[in-house]
Image (tube, rainbow, N blue to C red; front, side):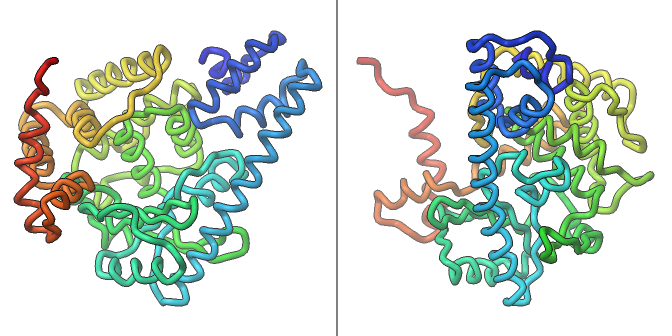
Length: 362
């Protein structure tokens, strides 16, 4: 990890032996920054052997092939939505990579994320079905996953669970704008909304991979927050996620200042600095665990301001945890030959109770 950080910070100087070289690239792959790492080595590291150079070329070639697939899928899907006269905003993916990294092939893509208005959610699902996507599991409170061959697409009607976070989506859509992605029109979040969304997304995943932090390091350089409050992001937890995002990104880019205009008192800033230091230390020492829904939202409790706001957020999370339906709930009901949503919802407490009972020791 230290070799990787030295490379990302332009501090890698000494020649690397084959073991260090392999370890560096393995770590970069684990942290989802392999294409960017390989490009930095290819362009700025002068000590590579012929075998090492061949591996860098192979990584570059494979990344370009994968990016071509994701890019063409995104463009054809957006075209299908335009033909259906449906507005759609592209979240993250190859378009974000091209704007932040300068080349879509320098950031790996694992799925496509598209945002539609809630009133168009059913029509958008029909469009996906028409172009060969099939549902991957059941929809939750704000998005659902779709699959076509090896391509996963997440269709969103909100940036986050509306039962946990109140975002004015109408205001957000009003600030969206049209741009071009490789010659085709594409609708994007406004710069301030996109920066806040990337911070919220990174916090949701507890900065589990270095890629999330590298995204933010680029985003804070290329996107900005306007002075004053932004309609739709009124909850102070959104300011906290931006502050925490910048505190994490500064580990990769020391020149990133704390954004101005955040509603953040000295005590909350100190608390978030402590959280950022602990999360960074954990990331340096051990692989990030796979977070389930409740673990992700426990981290949101740490980010929330203490006192009444944290108590209210804990209550919202407990209600969601008790009532949200996930694929396991539908599978449990299927065993009893029950399929309707209200039946699955009634059975969820029973499933959670059975799960909580410890298995007898043999």
